Image (cartoon, rainbow, N blue to C red; front, side, top):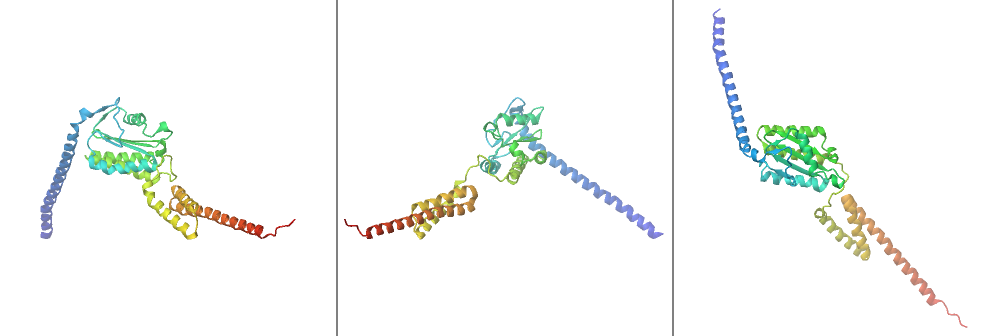
Length: 297
């Protein structure tokens, strides 16, 4: 009986201690949450000062002629420099015009319609040229609204569900006050999807990278000259080898360079052999003519 009484006494002492530890943990969690909220509030407060002067109404369209247009001063120069090559890559290799608009607040009752009007007004997709290769990412910081507008050609790579997922990820960063991080997630996610899902056939308007091709073309010239000297060919043989390799490289890369150069070499090599054979045959006829006895009258 004494043992049971001792156990109950120990439990009675332990329960208040456990309850006290639980209360302390709850207080610490509440204090940490309050500190995080205060930090986010301070970040938002800095941009609220800019909102009245740069607030945009539904009947106003800001200039988005640059790839990244940060009217909220939340992206920063370093991040713009970091994201710039990603946007340029889409323009260079896929003919996709990608633009970003960041505003402190956009005062409009219909945010998606406003973003679509902005896309159409500046012809981001190039519809006037018969294309629709455009992407517009709009971020309204203070009211935490995000919208991605894509042209019909880009919608194949960045589907409707993918756009919704990216918008939610960006809004999550805006909620915690990580405005620049939200813009970075939006830009990188869109570029990765286009790079991954874009059709591998070269679209109209893709620029040929001459800087990248300079070294293979230089080696092609050296190879053509050396091969011509070895087989005893002429200028036309070297020219045909170079032209064939260059055209092949433009359309099929390294495989096209090798195939085209060999094809050009063989074409002019056969011509060279044919001309030598004709010359030899002509010389034999001349010799026969000279050695034929002259008839006397």
